Length: 161
Ligand SMILES: [Zn+2]
Image (cartoon, rainbow, N blue to C red; front, side):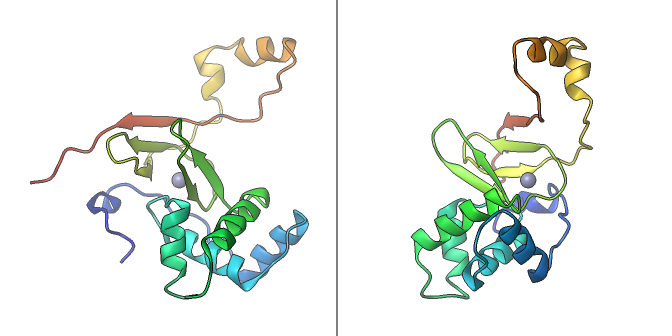
């Protein structure tokens, strides 16, 4: 149902599942309220492999909660991001997609459809040092403290005939 993309079978990483108690604890620790709608949004996100947009999350969650509003879904997603239960993957065109956090991982983006998938590659915490051993020190001298990095591989899936 949610795996409409045929490429999901080849690209995808598993995220550690969190139970409702963990979701509640993370939300409350971040100063956000726990609600059943937020829990439902998290559950949907956790199952989805396609890094859905807010609109897609809304359509999916409505199957379980027909009366939920798009505004509530947006607020739920923002709360999950604040609580580090979800990541917001922004794009230059202003569109955003979400994934349910988990371990650090890379993404690939199909630039023709905008779809985002997890990259089946091991995350390398030392990659910035490999790019330039002086980079982090130089940035620190400019007053910039590095807290992480993101990598997105760009390309297009060939149409399947
Ligand atoms: Zn991801």
